[in-house]
Image 1 (cartoon, rainbow, N blue to C red):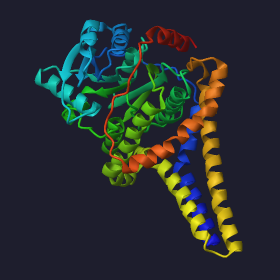
Image 2 (image 1 turned 180 degrees about the horizontal axis):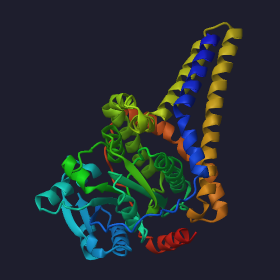
Image 3 (image 1 turned 90 degrees about the horizontal axis):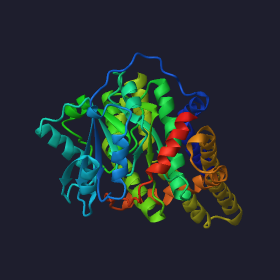
Image 4 (image 1 turned 135 degrees about the vertical axis):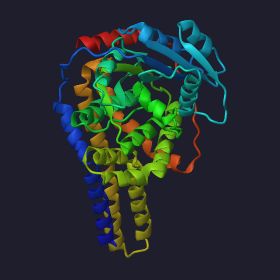
Amino acid sequence: MKEFTQLFNTAIAVILTLLYLYQLGYLLIGIVQKNRQRCCPPPSLRRYAAVISARNEENVIGGLIDSLKHQNYPAELLDIYVIADNCTDNTAQVAENAGAIVYRRFNHLQVGKGYALDYLFNLLTEEGKNDYDGYFVFDADNYVDPNFVKEMNITFGSGNYAALTSYRNSRNFGSNWISAGYGLWFLREARFLNAPRMALGVNCAISGTGFLVSGDLVRENGGWPFHLLTEDIEFSVNCALQGRVIGYCEKAVIYDEQPVTFKQSWDQRLRWSKGFYQIDYHYGMSLLKGIFAGGKRGFSCYDMFMTVAPGMFLTLGAILINLIMITAAMTLPPAEADMVMGECLGFIARTIFVFYLGLLMYGAVTTITEWKSIAVPGGRKLKFLFTFPIFMFTYIPIAAVALVRKVEWRPIYHGADQGGFIAAAGKKRLSA
């Protein structure tokens, strides 16, 4: 039994290492790659719509609209739409007062951002207003850097991309270890996932908010037919399968408010984990087949497959199997039982240590490379570096619960607007 246990643990470690080894290449690219200066002719000025799905967001939506009204881009080429989705507060009135075009939606059966976006795109089609070159999608708690639209327009102007994602920072990074955990994760995603993908010419991934979708693609899709719990990742997977390229614009910056209570964080990440399982179920086989297309399209399918693969759950499963082996070993002779339990306990300890060390390394590299973008004192940056692995460890019970529990979309409460603070942080980053 000891030999079997050793073989099983070694196989699990080798397989997981090989599957995710390519991300080490991403890490190296992210470290050595500096911000590239673009040399290109002045871009054409395109007409865009900013789309905001909001449910009970009266506290923050005015700040987002104000930041969109103050873009360094012609105001007549940027319309702002808000879908007040099942609101019971003054979100719609606040948005109208701030200058947005507001539609109210009440549907308690089809709940979620994907349905709200689909509703708006279909309304614009019915009203003959669906002729935009592209649509920006934001969450109500975002703050948009003044150069966001201008920078996205430059990258979109190459004509190479069906969609673009942006640099996502946090407006409340320093609130506590939870908001900092989110913040480091999104900075890591920008620097060590999407930036290397962009450099290699393969598909980036949309992450929730601050992205641009081609108007042609929205019209081709007949709206927004992505209604799983993680509709952003579903869209990204669909683009990889269809050979449509998602790009990344690092100079386009948004600031996103993160949850600060564990209850809200649990609910949100439970939805994300359940959404990943949904995507595994609906798209897993298609992604596996897409890998064999070869080239950049095949690699994009592999990258997305590994992105949605339940790696956390596989790690948890390996630990549980070792715990079962420990229990079974109690029926063996004492000497053999000691050897099996030693092997199993050693595997569990090594797995937890390597997991923590790997996350600490990613957190450290992200903190160092994005130091000027993290708007908190240096001491707190270092403190949050060590709490980042703990934040990520909490995904283990979340992934386990999401596997067996029915999960529905729930709104996340956002606090008062922090636009002044974010404006100062944005100016600091742009001048750095």
